Length: 211
Image (cartoon, rainbow, N blue to C red; front, side, top):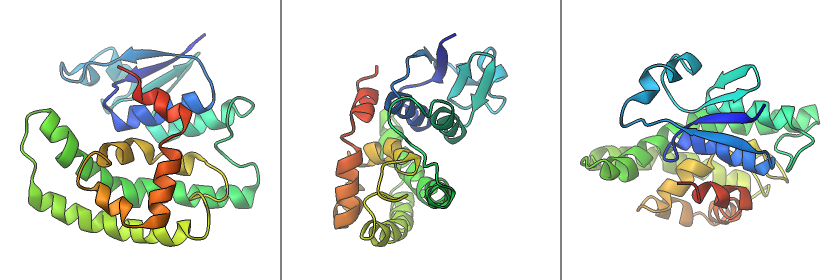
């Protein structure tokens, strides 16, 4: 039975899952959820995710929500497919896990807020709150200072190879690179090189082609 991903092509969380599936070279069916019509808040989608947020994944009789849980499931279950996104050395994987947590709890809150203010609000005809932008640019700068130090020591956040710790950043990173927040990445040479590297991965470029 084919893997199904219910989501939206503008959703950063859904893009995280698409990128992971592409890295593993897996075929899947994309089931669009019309968020403008509120389809994510009612049946049948609400049965897949009771919190009413995209994406949701079906793989046979397994149903999952929360994008980072989905990517970890894909990476482990289909370990023999495509590119390795996790490491099967417990100490090395522990480091990857640390940076996956950093993305979720340090990078994402600031980056998601900036993505909303600088990208999605204008897309929906809403007015950007410049005070909020300034506040969260400051927060993201502090996170990226830590990243700059880390990436001076290692090519990728989790170590020498690309993993989920890096992949999870791509959706917000892509949105922000089209805004003035790009300067926060560009002014840090190791962060800038890391961004340029991971944003040109074929699996990610395939996500960007989705309509």
